[in-house]
Length: 389
Image 1: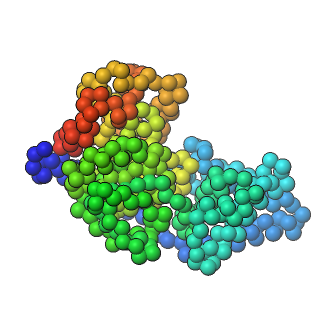
Image 2: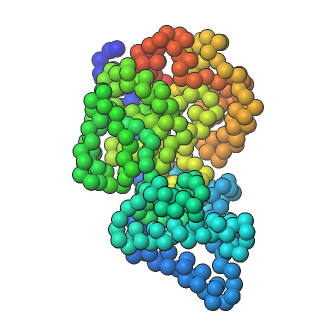
Image 3: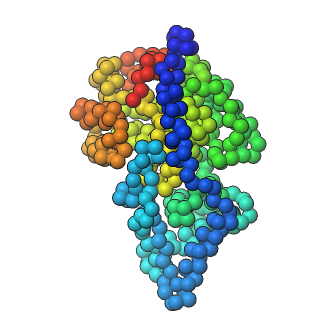
């Protein structure tokens, strides 16, 4: 596999380029200061005051929530990603409308829970909130959406509302750190996989000699790389997976690693529109969470594979390729039209190649070339020769 210096020379060059930009990027991304508990309580009280004022006037209270599903409410900044615009359009939740009265009650209940949590400096998970009144909330998803709506409405990060989410992500590799409760986490054993923390803001004393971080789209690929001792063979490095579309904690963890270590971060995703979108969420953020772009996005993420151009270059067998569905084609058109696509001409070329070829492929398709191709040939060569875009 060659010497370590030879193996990491292109990665070291990339890191040097990223470090030149890092001061500008971190300056742009840290314009927001921490919001005090007193200020959060004050913002909640102002919402309640508005409701009481409406009632005193014999008017039905109405809550105005920023519309987190409207692309017109976002703008793109290459150093931050997708961010919600000031003065964005809103959706209204009326207390006198049969269509929204339940949601109004749910929002008020969660406001009450958050107020008590912040006031007492205690924490609860979104799951705790749901099981506190399953009849009112109806589903866990309703709680998840409302917590994010409140976070956006108050302009306060969810972690500052003292509401935590159970993480689904996993992490392994050359990394040690201390959890908020004092638990020491050591990810260095090739047989140990750690769950991503549910309180990323509380992580401290991060120690790592890693040369790079690799985001792996799917849990199956992550487990395969662990079984093949990838982190040992390409040591020192860190691997993380959000098991598909990443949860907020997985995104926060990738951002934490970037802020702390300033090392290259690569994405290994399927060569399909869904995989590309997942990679874009890590890099540029998502529409629904654009109000938290400053703490969630990592614009330095590079696309390591699987590239549509790799399918031709490596002559992946045709029976390992899958025709694009109508849904895939629609997703691809949507991605090509996203505000960030024009800023990545190399990504644009790859997506246009997929569009022309009308085929996609999973990372596992490389096994059609050789069973150990991904771990022993594809990834080492990509990393050694700078095969990312």
